[in-house]
Image (tube, rainbow, N blue to C red; front, side, top):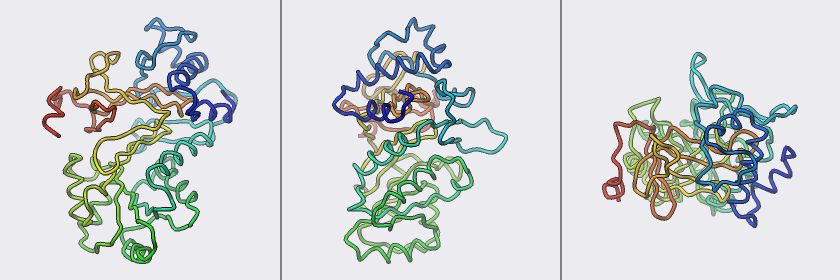
Length: 331
């Protein structure tokens, strides 16, 4: 599976049950990712074991700050991504051995929700271009290149009005894909004029630029500010340490691609999966991370419903725990 083509066949082949794909990648990473191999030893697991996905130990995401999370190989990474932060901060580093895998993960899931024959995508990501290792900027550039019409592009607050009116007469919807703080800046500038067939795709990013808003507050603010129905406000969930993205369309509940599995874990005992409605840390199995680590325990707080969808509630803070009352309080 060090061959990217073989890896792609395994990761994205829907005819192979997720459990089988997951088992093969667990064995592969246990053997060839020395850090993950050592991590699973206290759990009494061997590479040849075939644990169920829910029983596979999840590697703490901070490990991407502390070590070289990559399989043993002589090949240099195709791409290197680093989380945002100042030069003196400890930043996560994700080394991408196969650009092909990342491209397929990006495009397959995005087009499922926002096909280019229906959408023109305008990206507003101020500040992210200051990070030359930004995975979000790389993803946006790749999606722009993948649009057959050539219409999708980056926009600034200054040229957004000109572009959206240029495109509004076409038989396509306009998808404004932006960091939450940038979208709020557009609204607060007072210069935005509503346009027909506009939809919003926000990708978080509130905390470092203004007071942190809850998801419901943000959705209502975007709906009012852009004069867009809440059904047309969408969210993207991704991070430097993952090659896959997840989308919540028209609401706050995220769904996963067929090569990703999400669970909510008890922060005091990450081996325990929380019941639906019980808050905990978001655990992710991303098979596209085949050459780094597919089994990750994030520091994000979340909750899952009975349908297997999940909500992102912000960063984990034990003082915010509300347990099983969450679904009652927020439905």
